[in-house]
Each structure stands twice: as structure tokens, then as C-alpha cells.
Length: 233
Image (tube, rainbow, N blue to C red; front, side, top):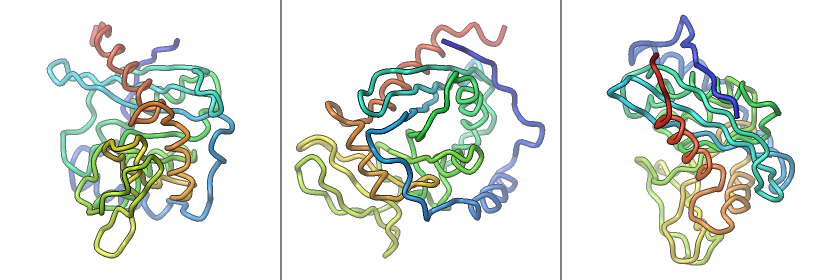
């Protein structure tokens, strides 16, 4: 497995004002009229990050799975400096440089990318999944553990049941029940994928657990990379 060191772009935002301006600029490039790859075909990649604030280190992992069998095809990790302060709604600016480095270190194309977070289900309609999709051109979705600031009715208790995730009357995602009687996950479009297809991918990736296998494997890998990191030297 490859581990690389992430470099912070010279023009990376350092203030909330600048970060919001970048969000506004890039949000216009989100593609919402493509359905995305069919579930269960090709490759699907999970990305996740872990932090050590005391050492000012962030670790990112990218884990490529065969979409049909969910077998691991490739893995890569990256280590970097924490690139932005913690500000709700701007978390992508803490994570993306290191996530991009992990994706670029993969030995094969990632296919659909699944983020542990949000896409359109974001106060500015531009969460990590959308940001990452625009920067890479890859189809992306967000699968989050909670609904952020949005409202939803509880889906039926059976696996596969869904209900709209709403900002007022606007559907920004869906609550998706991935296990019978277990709390749903919250799925939103990132880039170049329809919402229905994003939900179908999520169900295809959750044969035995609440969270997608992509997220589970990337979470374990980035935590291990952070634990084992001799960084900074």
C-alpha cells in the first residue's frame, strides 16, 4: 500500500471569507443531470480522514472496492498538515488536500467516490462530496451518519426504505434505512450522480452493516495510518 505526503496548495484559503467565496465559485460547476455508474458495476472508492490535533496531522485513506463483490482492489493513504480551522460548513477545507493526495496515489481509477459526509445536503449546498467531485471530475456521493441541520420523517423500519431530507420544501438528500430497525444514513448527491442512484449505491454497499463498506474500510485505514504515522519527522 502506498502512503504519500500531502502538499497544501499555495492558494489554499486561510480565512472563512475566502473559503466561502471558493465554495460559491465552485458550486456553479456541480453537475446534477447525470445518473452516474450503475450500482454493482466497476469500482467504487471510499475516502475518509482522521485527525491528531496535538500533532497538527491529518491522515486520509482511499480504499477501492470491486463494486460487485466488495473485495478490496487497492488502497492508499496520505498524511498532511491540518489545512484549515474547524468551522461547521467548511470542513472540506480541512480534508480535501490530503484526500486528493490519497486518491492520486491509487494505482487504478477510483470509479464512484463515496464520502463520509455531505454533498448537496449542506447549508451552502456544497459539502465535501460536491467539492471533491468538482475538483476531480469524478462521480461522488455523500453518505453521512446524521442529517446535519435538515429535517426528515423517519423511513419505514425495513431495509431499503427512504424518506426525503428537507431544507424547507427542497429535497437535499434522503434518509436511507440500510438495516431493518436501525437508524438510517443520510445520502446526498455530490457530483455527476442522481439521488436515486446514490441511494441504490448506498444499499449495494451495505450488505451487513449500517454504514457502507467503503466508509468502514476507509475509516479503519485512515485511523491506522494516523496511529502509525511518524509525522512530522
